[in-house]
Amino acid sequence: MKAVVFHGVGDIRLDEVAEPKIEKPNDAIVRLTANAICGTDLHLVRGTLAGMKPGTILGHEGVGIVEEVGSAVRNFRPGDRVVLPSTLACGNCSYCRVGYFAMCDKANPEGPDTAFYGGPSGSGGYQGLQAEKARVPFANINLYKLPDGISDDQAILLSDIFPTGYMGAELAEIKPGNSVVVFGCGPVGQFAIASARLLHAGRVFAVDSIPSRLEMAQAQGAEIIDFEAEDPVETIKGLTSGIGADRAIDAVGVDAVRPHHGPAGKKAAKKKAEFEAEIKEIAPKTGEHGDNWHPGDAPSQVLEWAVEALCKAGTLSIIGVYAESSRVFPIGNAMGKNLTVKMGNCNHMRYIPMLAQLVKSGVVDTGKVLTQSEPLLDAVEAYKQFDLRKPGWIKVKLEPAVPSAKAA
Ligand SMILES: NC(=O)c1ccc[n+]([C@@H]2O[C@H](COP(=O)([O-])OP(=O)(O)OC[C@H]3O[C@@H](n4cnc5c(N)ncnc54)[C@H](O)[C@@H]3O)[C@@H](O)[C@H]2O)c1
Ligand SMILES: [Zn+2]
Ligand SMILES: [Zn+2]
Image (cartoon, rainbow, N blue to C red; front, side):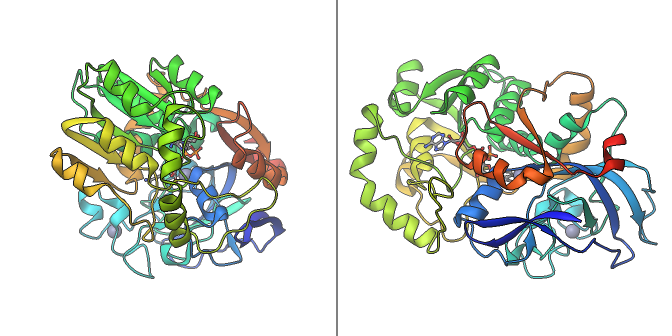
């Protein structure tokens, strides 16, 4: 079968690989009808989330049809149409039993890190979903049977980014009426905005520099701020009578970029050397090819802005991904303002059943975030365009070219 395979930092290829097989009684094999590229995949290819083993199939977002189940899988059968949550859980340990699925003690045989498909070696060694088929471990808990009336285009967004955006809003402790600033208007940021609205936020500010992403945020009712044109901290303060926002959500993560123009650009330029020292520690090995696979140039920029833009006693929620090697956070400012800081990998299965109902009923229109559908066969080119943030590209779905999948 065809799959997108990590060969090294800055080197991914579409390879012919062996099909997965049932290895344990609680495994299932799913024939994927859709998978997608995520900001997390970009960190892996850029080298800002290190530790990928060459030969790993990338991707952790998938929708498909169950093809085979092991003898211990009692709640699914061949033919079921399912979405695959990105993080893997056992459903049975003390963490899973209280809904901390990303903290599962058993799904990762290699240690305490969150288990997910297609990740670094410490994340469990599971092959990813940018392929024609996948092996799902602990399939009884790591599949969700899709209700009728949800298309692949909608379902693929339930696999990772809608739950993550929702968890970001939940961690931000949004109360009705609160003002919320969302940093990053990529797919996760868009769903953080939608989720802040679901939780009855009053005002939502959205910060990015990419026009099409800011426009989409504005279409959701957010008050947009282009960090290349104005200083986001000053602007948020100005729009809130000097108080700051009640809640902030970091939906950017380790590949944050700094402004290169405008008033914020001048401030950030002074920190160039500090940011460069951070990058060296975070991504000792990079693999730039022309314009592709450049790490962000300011890993802690969003953390700094978020802490500054919050009001006293506000809450910061971090769902953008930072690895162990990210060690810069403005602890003094956060302490001085009595901030609450919450963060983490998404407990996908905790949210998917509820969010699927919101999608099915039309309460949330997921359709607009997915801007591209490309054949899996063109995945490498799609990755490159997504990495360049090609105008208009926000979320890319990949379609495996399996004839039977087309018919499904
Ligand atoms: N916690 C989790 O479980 C989880 C799950 C999925 C994704 N993520 C993470 O969420 C983050 C966002 O994912 P995505 O798919 O939306 O990524 P993306 O790369 O498509 O979007 C990131 C956005 O941030 C913007 N940005 C860069 N620097 C910025 C700055 N200084 N200020 C404001 N915006 C800035 C970029 O222009 C871009 O639009 C990534 O770090 C990803 O790894 C986390
Ligand atoms: Zn993802
Ligand atoms: Zn568990």
